[in-house]
Amino acid sequence: IGHQVGMNGERDRETAFAKRADICAKYQRGADQQAFDRGHEAGIEQYCDIPNAVELGTKGVSPTNSTDTCPEYDYPGFASAYRAGHKLHELNRRVQQAQAEMDRLESDVYQYQRERSQLRRDVRSGDLSDDQARYAQRRSRQLGRDIRAIQNNAYYHRDRVLEYQRAADN
Image 1 (cartoon, rainbow, N blue to C red):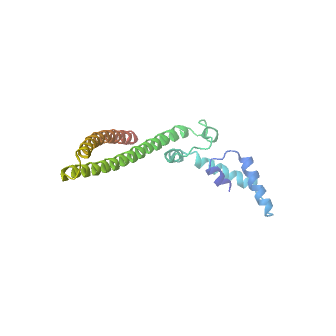
Image 2: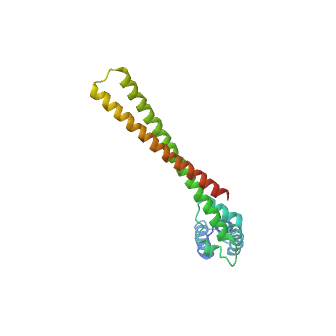
Image 3: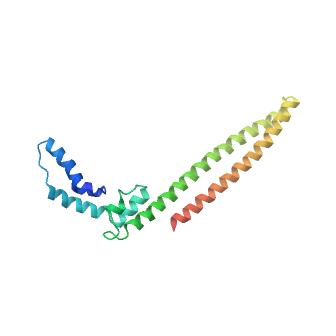
């Protein structure tokens, strides 16, 4: 149990042990402080190693008071490894956001193109009054401008995705 507590980054051994000892007492079981402490120390060692710091960062998990749990003088490199992992997490999050926005924009373009095509068919059919035909033509032109604006916005997001991916690769 101490090992698991340490692996969770919980540094306050006494409080953590007291909680577990209370639980053990409810079931009339003894709690071994020395075994808990040995397990906790091993868990903290694993928690504060460099690969775990990177993993915590890439998952976006905030390390439990990492400066207190894994102080630089005891665990050199933990903080910088976490920051590197967290930067990668942030870049990946931005890529996902930009990709989601691109998907939404593509959907908008598709809908606008469908509406524009229908308006053009209606105008060509000759079934519209003159006022309706003029409105349909104005609306079609406006949709064309909107489509170009949306496509430009999509290009912007596509460039951001590439930029974030290049940054993540570095």
